[in-house]
Length: 364
Image (cartoon, rainbow, N blue to C red; front, top):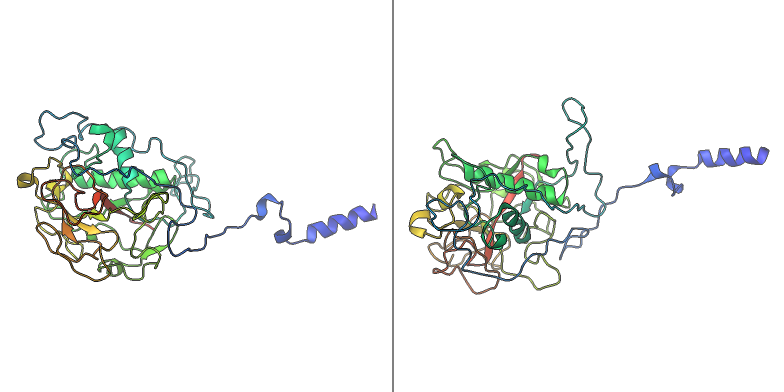
C-alpha cells in the first residue's frame, strides 16, 4: 500500500513536459525557414506546366461573345471550394474556432492562423475554372474575365474576391471566411468611381500561408518590392499553398510565370482605363475593345531595375505591382521563357504568366 501511494504522489508531481504520452501535453512547433525552395510543410500546388499562348476561343461570359462554347460567367457557378484539399502547414496550430464570434453559437468556423496574402496558383485557377464550366475544362484559366458568377456593376472585382476566398479555403479550411480582396485596379467600382488596388487591401499586416511576413503596412507594400518582407519570399511570392510560385512543382524546373494582373501603376493605383479588361469582365482577346491588362512581377525579371516592358509599356521589371503591359485579355498561359509578351497572342499570359493575381485578407 505504501509503495503504491509513493508511486502515485511522484507521478502526480512530475511536470507535464516529461509525461510524453499525455494527450494534453502537446506542443506547437514552427517549421524552420529554409530560406530557399518550397516552404516546409506546404501542400503541393503542382499544376499543368504545358503552355499555350493561344488560349481558349473566349472566356465564358465575355461581353459580346458569339458562338462560343462553355458556361456563361454570369451564371451561378459550381461550388468554388469543391474538391479542395484538406491541407495544413507543418507545425501549424489548430485552424478552427467553433461557434460564432459574436454570439458563441455553434456553426461557422474561423481560422486562427496568420494567413492574409498569396499569389493565385495556376493549378488553383485551372481547378476553379473547370468547376465553373469554362471552355477546355478550364485549362486556359479565366483570362481577364473574373466575374466568377457575379453580375451587374462591379462584378469583376467581386468575382475576383470570391476566387481569392475559394483558393484560401481550399488551402486552409476556415481561411475563406476572412474578407479577401484581389489586388486589382478598375476604372469603375460600380458607382462610376475608379478603384485603386492599393486601397482595397486593408491596413496590414499581411502574412503568407506559413506565417512569414509579407508587409506590415500599406507604406511597406507600396514599393518596388515590399519593405520588411521576409527574405525568403521577398523576391518570389508564394501561392495559396505557401509554395514559392516561380517553381510551384518541385519535381520540375522553374517556369516563367511571374506576370500577375493588377491594372495598376508602380504605386498600386489605376494605370488607365485600358489596362483592366473592361473592369475585369471580358476575355475576348479584342484589344481594340478591351485594351491590354497591366501586370506586375511576382518575382523579378532581373537583378537590376528597369526593362523594355514588352508591348506598349516600358516599366520596372522588378516591380510587383506594375512591370509591363500584356498582349490582351484572352485566357491562356505561356510558362516558357521567350522574352516579352507576344503582340499577336492577345492573351493575359503570353509574356510569362497565366492570368494570376494577388490576394489580400483584411485581417491577418
